Image 1 (cartoon, rainbow, N blue to C red):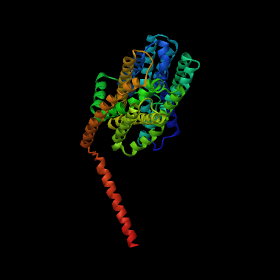
Image 2 (image 1 turned 90 degrees about the horizontal axis):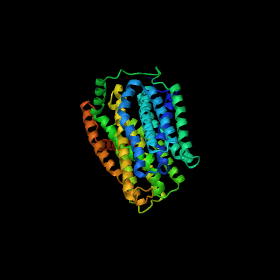
Image 3 (image 1 turned 45 degrees about the horizontal axis):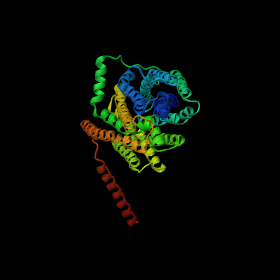
Image 4 (image 1 turned 180 degrees about the horizontal axis):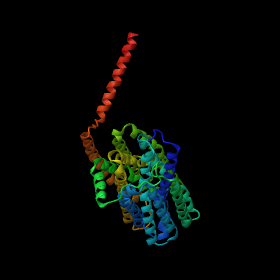
Length: 449
């Protein structure tokens, strides 16, 4: 593979990226339509949360099966299939006025979404040299979040203007268009349009899944994704819009602006994190831990603020949450570097389960707490949201324990393979010593002159 990817590689990646942007739009569409959905289906916060939870449950539950299918059938088939399923789900959402229809629609969206992201990630190492993979992977994740801008601005505008049916039919039509483009333009590898793996057998499934799970590096990726991704997903997918409008008293346009800022922060932070991961692959966990603490501090400031938080404080929260998405991409880099190519799809699927399991549990618990405090009505007070949002700290604590434990196990495995990760304080001390030595030598030379 050439050291520099050509125009063809970037073109294939761009088509895959368009499919992922659309998947994010479909995934987050219910978040901006949350209050409208409560009116349309005559449901409370708990039932509304169950729509998103079911969607995420389908997404998370299909990650490992989709990973196995990805290793067998390649990216092209799964991306096109996912686009068609999501379009069908959004079309059903546009036309139904029953709770059962809405549930079926979110199941279809969740299933199609599950096929898209890891299939696009699988394209990256096939088309780009290894040294470019961390940065392009970050770009995939963060540029893909432009789908949140599409849901927060154009889709929200369609909901407020032409209405529910037009908004969701527009999303469905866009999905069909992107699926057709992907079918025409995508290639699994530079050599083949469709690159199939070995036939699936029950024994091989068990071997690949067990091998991916047993490696502590894969589990480190899972806990990384679990802890860094979920709170931003909770905010963007379900409760951010209601929290800002009904809880903080902001106008719909202001809330859309903050959600757009959330996306832009991720887009700005992603390339920087990608470069840092590329240059310091043995220090990835420090980036992860820093992001976790930033998220915890951002929510802590907002929840501890008396009454409504002022706009600068809400902006700080959005800035902290915005780096969580790029941070979760580090989990996929763990999967890539700790697993052989033939089970990369499986390992990526295992990692991708983490954040969405934490997200769906958080979303449902927040909805249940809001219902318990308001009796099922949609008349929320800021105090109700503060109590409900605080449940996220439980998942942050669980994830932090998982990261620290699996990091230790991964380092033990690396040491057995001859790779020793020295403590950061030792590396810093050595570099300071070298810098001090250079300074003394320079002064000595100046004195001689």
